[in-house]
Image (tube, rainbow, N blue to C red; front, top):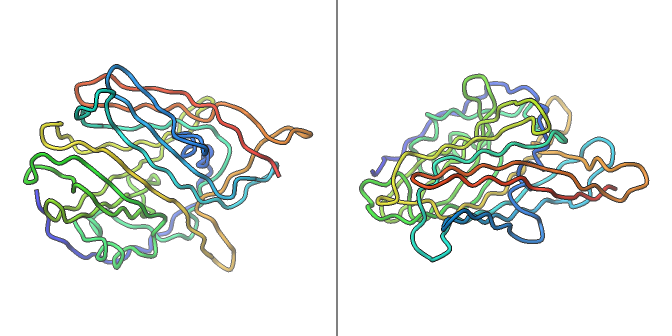
Length: 270
């Protein structure tokens, strides 16, 4: 369905600092920096790639980072994949997501909206950019554009931190939608969970086929420097790096089995 662009007003509600399981690991868990990991069950396959800068991180404490990630959904035989319904990333505990003093964006300010209007409304809360792709079969019924620009905004929903990934595209018709990435807590090794739920549509209407996103934000608050994302490398003394389980990812599809994978990655201590 086509949506008319709208313009909201920037929310300056204050966010508190949240120490979470490594956001570095949460995003790097989608793929190793050297190349994409391929997850497959039956005919459905999901590949992801992620890169972190800088590559070397402090042995003690944390340092600012930028994370770039991309993902693709497909099938082994080249047919149209089922609709991706939900992604859950349960992540390890090293690292930090810092939103202290960072403005927040409210969903009604950017949905619906063009990219330009979303930035006018919530530019101060911007934490990332990227791109989006989908295979749209019925334009009038799809909540997705076939290709779109992604802008990520810092927000809160139900008292919890959230990343609002705003997507806007003009083909096959002007379409806007916003994907919330909700942050929640859990017990155990994988102590933080990021959950994204897509609109409930079937593959006869449209399917999500790709997403890229770079998350990074440096800002000042009350005279102090802050980084939206930061992380360290918890290597033991005398070792140049560490190898350990980073995350457990679950990909839920409509009409197809879920794909679950636990990933092990390494970091380099400086």
